[in-house]
Image (cartoon, rainbow, N blue to C red; front, top):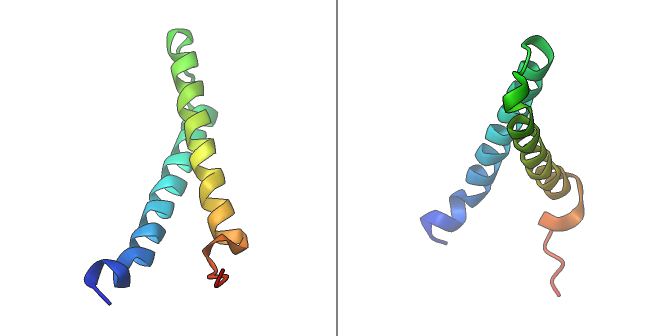
Length: 71
């Protein structure tokens, strides 16, 4: 087992935590600060992309995708 194969789970968890923090901060900003009208589409695209990434994180950790099926 190499260094990379031992630590890939930790790296995935770290990336998942970064995505969760970014999503939470984007929602915090959208709730508590007004987004200027000229930046509204850009902000909506940012939240949409983070929503997609969060869906990937949730599907990885809450489904059987990370289990080895032995197939």
